[in-house]
Amino acid sequence: MRPEEVNVCVLRIEGTNCEDEMADAFRAVGAQAEKVHLKQLIGRSPTEMRRSLEDYDILALPGGFSAGDYVRAGAIFAARMKSAIGKDIERFVEDGRPVLGVCNGFQVLVELGLLPSFDETMSPTAIAALYTNDSGRFECRPTILRNDNKGKCIFSSSIEKGKTLMMPSAHAEGKLMSRDPDFIQKLEDNDQIVFRYVRENGSKAEYPWNPNGSESDIAGICNPAGNVMGMMPHPERVISRFTHPDWTRNCPSEEGDGLPIFRSVIEKLR
Image (tube, rainbow, N blue to C red; front, side, top):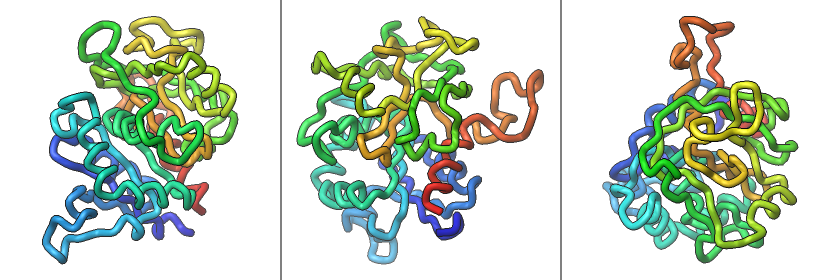
């Protein structure tokens, strides 16, 4: 499959606000990306605007504040997806097709039960959640991420293990937690931890390097199969080096640190 043959569904509802950047990121690596409203997938739009999830190779859930983040962040978006197209999404993932959720999209994937999904494709109820930041406020800052995945996750497959990348975070509820006392160990055993927050020198993060207090400094995880990934920082906002905060001082190339995530999945589909 050539990059230009890859069709990406960037799914949105009221309140999502990063769909343009997400679509542009996939286009930057040669894919065809379309912004699709959930109503278009569930038959609640004019006939000529209706779409089917089966027509896409990648599903991407962007950031924002879907449905105002009422109840919990991402909960309403997830509930609407599960009730209307839950089986379609399950088949999509079981077919091995990639799913990416960033920030609010990560929150949606957890609420859906697609992450961490230890025992099945989509858990009937969420077994984790993204809680309020330890600071009790919205955190918007550059963060340094280290790729800790051993190769399972297709979204980091072209990124050297241990490599650090700068990506901006912008969230109020990014602290990944679970009532399962073995939650972190299960993630470790299954190679489901993808990115961790670290300091600039790659050492263990503390606030503000870890902007939310997430246990084990986790910034992104994947499912056991490696084709579903959620992360809180925004790779789609640093596709070009010129959107890095230090670009006037440190601009070794025009490529931004977020681009390898999108390139990785396209190369895997090839």
